[in-house]
Image (cartoon, rainbow, N blue to C red; front, top):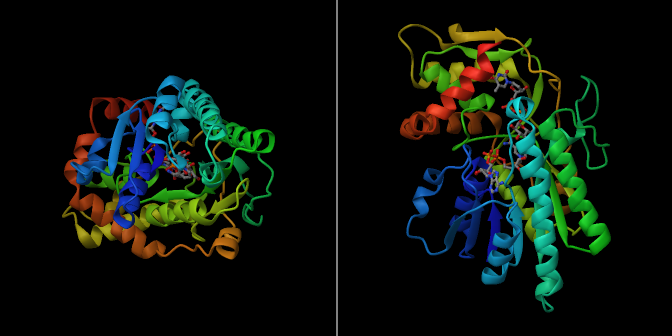
Amino acid sequence: MILVTGGAGFIGSNFVLDWLATSDEPVVNLDALTYAGNLANLASLAGDARHIFVRGDICDRALVDRLLANYRPRAIVHFAAESHVDRSIHGPGEFVRTNVQGTFTLLEAARAYWTALDEPARTAFRFLHVSTDEVYGSLGPDDPPFTETTPYAPNSPYAASKAASDHLVRAWHHTYGLPVLTTNCSNNYGPYQFPEKLIPLVIANALGGRPLPVYGDGLNVRDWLYVGDHCAGVRTVLEKGRQGETYNIGGWNERTNIEIVRRICALLDELRPDPAGSYERLITFVKDRPGHDRRYAIDARKIERELGWRPAETFESGLRKTVRWYLDNQAWLRQVQDGSYRAWIDMNYAAR
Ligand code: NAD
Ligand code: DAU
């Protein structure tokens, strides 16, 4: 069995669903159910004995020790984090607590557990840490994409907290020999993404007839990857990755934000036309994000060369699937747009 943290969030829930769709190996899913965690994402697993959900905090050492002792996982796949850059600007404390202290707590619990394992369980054990391309900082227009050896230069409180967690993971391998793997992935999109992030926010606002906020000049570039491809990449690294190594995961798919927003509008115009006119009429340029990184791009050749992973989805097919998913799951979307969601939207966008 494996222990997954943050498995009720966007990528974590996609990972758990994909895992149990392709394997019978049970999953213990530890998630605090913050605003970003949602058991509705896992509703299709109701009654499935292979999924054991535990509501709890990764900073709770006693709880993590208990889970490791009771379930004896062969691996920990660590997704749990505070993940939204704008929230990290408004309130960085929770990012340091969960992303740094939480990862430290997991590493220490994993080290104690792993040290006491018998062979061959000790040799087989893995701690897979899911991280981000944001740790590498911002690229200029002509810079080559980030590789695994690009120096760290995190710019937001979120990126700095993830960079700190990556350093802890590296040190636990170097110093204690803990068999770790780290993945640094680019921007994900797909089903179950909380509508604070660009793609689901634009879809949700368009469906509600609200402005589609584009920060600054809209020319910041991100490298977009369909979430199912990211999950396959994580599974591949867990299965075949060399311990102590990091693997960059990306979509070979750089787009400006304005291009993304226009593409979503075009898909909605086709799939759910608005009698009032094209959704593009709702595009609104707003004040930029402080410290906004200009460009991210991932060089994903190492994971392809060493482990044979490549994204399966094209941006066209992935975005179409995603827009359809939100159209087909408007009850899910309404459910997450609760009071605390509206309070966040008011706070983040009022002053822009
Ligand atoms: P998310 O915000 O959707 O989900 C995070 C999950 O972690 C939630 O279910 C939340 O309840 C849980 N969580 C938060 N604090 C916790 C705590 N203290 N204890 C236990 N659970 C806690 O995030 P996501 O977008 O699914 O990202 C998952 C991971 O992937 C993160 O580590 C993130 O840094 C990384 N990542 C995300 C992206 C992206 O584009 N979304 C890209 C690259 C890497
Ligand atoms: O690169 C990987 C990272 O991608 C992950 O580590 C983060 O967890 C994830 O949130 C994401 O970070 P970004 O800041 O790139 O994602 P976000 O969806 O917030 O923004 C994408 C781009 O769109 C960014 O340039 C900011 C811009 N944006 C965002 C929002 C929410 C807008 O123009 N308008 C908006 O309303």
